[in-house]
Length: 83
Image (cartoon, rainbow, N blue to C red; front, side, top):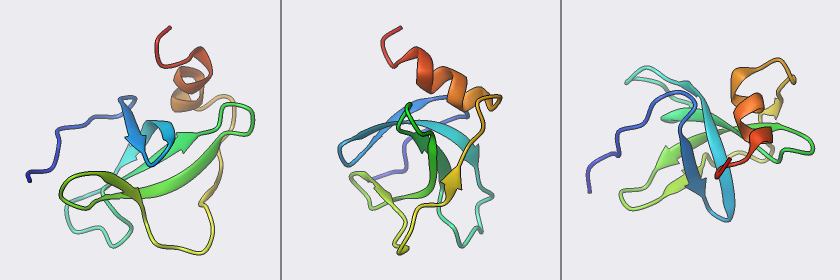
């Protein structure tokens, strides 16, 4: 299946998490397709890949870190998906 068209600040579903696209990587990135932020109580970042049918977190032992409240993606996340 073809990679879905996404842009910064779009909502995507990764596993059981509603996530906001924070950064889209270049086509030759080793990190994945994009970085998302999720968990509005403690905004967490993680790289995401496409497996042909679903968005999945990149296989790493830990999450990427935390995003500040000033990040536009965090502001969208905190408003909520259906705001």
